[in-house]
Amino acid sequence: MLISVESPRTVRLALLPPLALYVHIPWCVRKCPYCDFNSHEQKGPLEEKRYLEALMRDLEQLLPQVWGRRLSSVFIGGGTPSLFSPESIDALLSGIRARLTLEPGAEVTLEANPGTVEAARFRGFREAGVNRISVGVQSFDDRMLAALGRIHSAAEARAAVDAALQAVGNVNLDLMYGLPGQDISMVVSDLKEALRCGAPHVSAYQLTIEPNTVFFSKPPPLPEHDLCADMQAVVESMLLENGFEHYETSAFARPGRRCRHNLNYWEFGDYLGIGAGAHGKISFPDRVTRHERAKQPAEYLKGGATVENREIPVGELPFEFMLNALRLVEGFPATLFEERTGLSLFILKKELERAESDGLLERDWQRIRPSARGRLFLNELLEQFLPTR
Ligand code: SF4
Image (spheres, protein in one colour):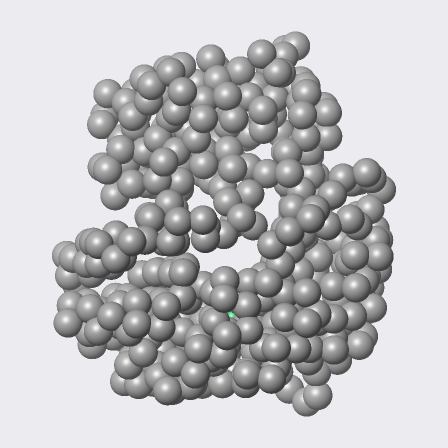
């Protein structure tokens, strides 16, 4: 066994997990009415240079906690990182490389929104070191895009995906379903268009109404629950029939094209989070910690980076692990729990047995995975692992 539990309050990790880096760029052209991310409407010129300086200060603060460790992936998310110029992305990636070593072939993703990019910009991102682009398409139907308050048209979405494919080949396309006024045939059309584009990765999310959004105060009429479930089934079956693997609740990839950065989250790996509102997780031989940054860009720019730095209580580690790993359709190797939490899987004996007898979980000697029913009722499955106080 790799890890020993000395007492319920102490853990010992024999191996540290892979380390990734998330960089948050918090601005967008306009705030979408359904969005609860830490994104802020861009007012006036973007302070790219100042923000890059703040990011580097932020990264430097974290370095003593990860001396000697290499980065397996970088993800530049937002907000709309494609609002930043290729020169700024180049400066950002150079700054990261000057401070941390990237593993050979590390995945470097940048999120882009149609309407903010053209082919030359994508080529510039590639030259800066970006080798994967995630395009926020959401729909190829102009009526749906208008209902979502997106700034782009279907034609711009197609052009952005084509340009991203030409620039880097490794492209994710974000789609949403369960949209106001949407029916099954419209979901099928979106999927056909996604398949025609040739992107090797699709992330498909159901629209949900979140607090602190415009849609929360003025909810649009959404398709009924059963219709949304049918839409989800159509998404899964069409992508599977066309050679995609369904590997996480919302993620589908052609073989060899899974997102390594996101897999690291779901496998409870470590990640540094820099930028406004970013958060991260760092493991040490005897503890696992989380850090979080100030949400407001103005505060972040002033240098008020850290708002939280805390050790995850040992009693919360099992739930935190399951919250991530049970999103994986194929589940996780039984040994991974001990590797990542420093706790014996034996402490979850009762919970695992109960989830199994409720038909929410399947396991053999090697793997633990959510059942088809467990994937459908993921919250019910996760509740089994909530910490008891
Ligand atoms: S573009 Fe994305 S991050 Fe920006 S407001 Fe819209 S949904 Fe949120």
